[in-house]
Amino acid sequence: MKFFNHLTFGQYVPSESPVHRLDPRCKIIAVLVLLTGVFLAKHPAVFSVWGVLLACLTAAARLPFRLVLRSAKPVLILVLFTASIHIFFTSGTPLLSLGIVTISREGLVLAVYMGLRLLFLVLFASFLTLTTRPMELADGLERLFSPFTRFGFPAHELAMMMTIALRFIPTLLDETDRIMKAQLARGASFDRGGLWKRLKAFLPVLIPLFVIVFQRAEDLAVAMEARCYRGGAGRTRMSPLAWKGTDTAALLLVPAVVILLVTIDRSLA
Amino acid sequence: MEYHIPEIFGAGWNSPPAVKDLQVRSPRAERLIRCDSGADCEADRQGVREVRMEEDGEIRIFAPDACASGAFLFREAKFFMEATTVNSTRRMVWTALLSAVAAVLMYIDMAVPLFPRFLKLDLSDLPALVAAFAWGPAAGVFTELIKNLIHSLTTSTAGVGELANFLMGSALVVPAGLIYRRNRTRKGALAGLAAGTLSMTVTAALANYFFLLPFYSNFLPLEKIIAMSSAAIPAVRDMGTLVLYAVVPFNLLKGTVVSLATVQLYKRISTLIR
Image (cartoon, rainbow over the protein chains, first blue to last red):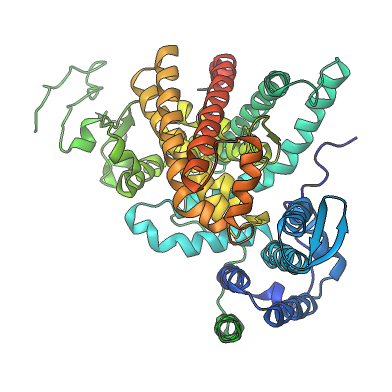
């Protein structure tokens, strides 16, 4: 039994596609613009266009559709929950009556909209992590934040910390899993009892976890020191980010499409 | 302010003095002890004549408005990363790993009885508090920031939930870290955690009222959120009472639980820090 097998952080899928080759900076901004667009969509026709766009993007990124859909798994419960609330708590023309529960036409429509909207948000956001390596993502964030360095914002350190954190999350999940199993073998139970009892049961997991984390942090710090790590200034990269013409094109195309869709949406509504 | 301490005699015959002088130039330098042996001729040739050491407990202000302001955070952040010494690499790596723990803990959340289901308790602020206690409030804020950046990779709220979590977490961590830095005792820790819990509750109430609930109402109309909540808490009638009777007690509870867990944990692991 694994406790955390539903977590997919480093869900990068390597592939040779135009989307993969885009600059991470370009992808971060484009995804933010796309999310805003999805968020503003209201009309059913525009929603279907967003669905088509999602399919196009999947094809352009040469990703299996199944894989993209899988990234929505963590929020599936949330989507179903939101949809069911809309189905059962919207009054309108009744479609189906089961005792006290009445499903109305309006409720069903709303449920589909809201469910799709949540689903689309997650799916579009997942494109960033599906097509960009965590390292590239951190690099992109560093470069995007770098204008703030003149105000004292540690952009390089932030990116470095994020890279380290991302690299260690799978390790820590494994460690947590192992500690929880060890405690279970000694008779601990994590899902029984009230809130307080469950929290108290969790403390014997946290303490060894923090001890492991401190050891790893110390090892890593010593290793970095030994290799003369001294911050961002003067650091060279194996593959520095390069802004290409396709990035500029993508960054013009995406906002144009989003603005177009939002204006159509507004005029239809 | 500029003053000199006369030369201290040399350590051995004809050898340069161990400590030449102590000069204070700026408020920043006031907190640094200047050591200059003059023995390192290589450093001398390059014009580097001093080694500065940092002392603990540098920033001595504490004002609630100052904590909230971006200027304060920027200055703390700048200070946090200023010196590229052994300490700062360690500080960075520790913060990074604590953020990783926080990101993991953020996914282990549990529903709390008596509260609406969408308010969930997680212990992800715990590593941030540990970071704030061990390395100062800026480390805590960075832990919160990285945790939320990582969480926003798998976001279901287009980053708005993460932004709110970051603001609330920082409001918890900054007062706790500042007070504990001034008073490194159990009492100081408890006072800091209490102040942090209060400031987190206020931030949560404001964030929920002004942008979180209006944002969520795009997915779930507000009436339905309120209907859901009044099933759990009958006193909830509108957004104001929702914040007052659900968000405020929930965050007080969350702050207390996280604080108690931090005290329990920090007591046991503090010997391993530094």
